[in-house]
Length: 452
Image (cartoon, rainbow, N blue to C red; front, side, top):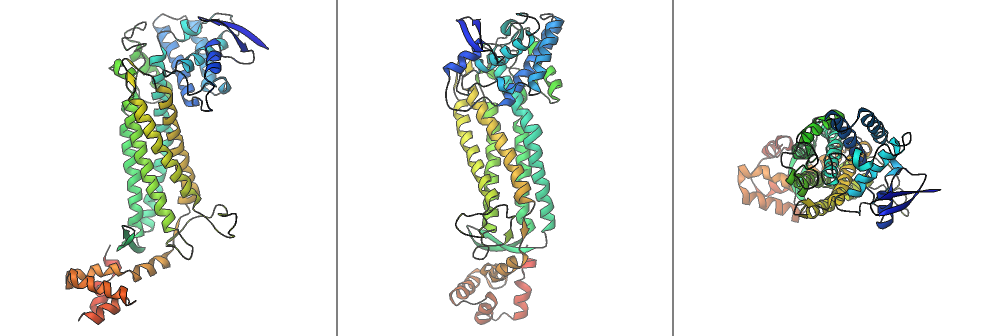
């Protein structure tokens, strides 16, 4: 069954099983593009805004108590996820996000009017004191800060804590270092892992600092930043109300013209996510190289065998978690390019690339959060060092000759390393053959334990 509703352009036929109205229906019909839809966290954020606006408008005597209560009740149902299937709109819509804003307005109005026909209007009451131009970017900021604060940063902290523990656990295990993919001087495995831990610790700080600007909200700027049709106190009151609803800190952006036409704050924040992705790519590469083998690779560590690795080679186990993490890292890097370009497209008073910025930003946050969790639980926790292999490779390394340089000089030390390589000798054998160094002095000076 269908019903007929009207908007400014005339009648629209709508499937009677759905709660949306004519503007949502028009968008569904006119933007049948690919499969990407507006992520639900932004829908939740829009519902939070409608709830907050109803409260603030009631406090400013623009909305009756009854309408405020009805709007809040309907918004709460959306926030609780009871109507997720009512928000089907494509990312590829108007660049201001107007269709998605109206989608939420229409669903809330329909829920309110189920008991009172035509009692609440999606524009006159639910969109009161707002426009899509300040509402949608506010929803973007709310959803982004919530996802980072409650999901991504806590998972980053779990990684940092685990890596710091492994740093301590592996402090006494000596291995050979590598620079330029070549043998270098020794270090402890704990020291190597501490580099990974430092990446996570610093990335947490980078992301936390970068999200501060995203805590500023555009709401109250309405169509072009002047605040027309909203009270002068509306933006500040909304930021305070939304802070209470989210239990997070938000402020009213002091420059609403900036807040509507620029998304440099999101672009800057995503740059911090890109940095995290780069470090995760490095860590995953280190781990899969160190675990290569089991017999013909480096084989310095063992990672969990989660599933068979080959459809043709029996017994083969691949570093699948590393591969998944590296793939999502490069996806985040690609998203960064999209966001940087889209954020540059603010023409005059409004950036009209908001949905694609929102989509890519949320995808990056979710990819990083889920990828970090999957890798931690299925790889990082079970990573173990192969102590004997580390010791053997360290003992065979010619770069231990670096410890002789203070005693016999760089050039003589280089000759020893070259001779050992050419003649298939150990470093000790070449040293005793080419110099007057005693075996006792060699053992004293060329001791990996003393090189870290």
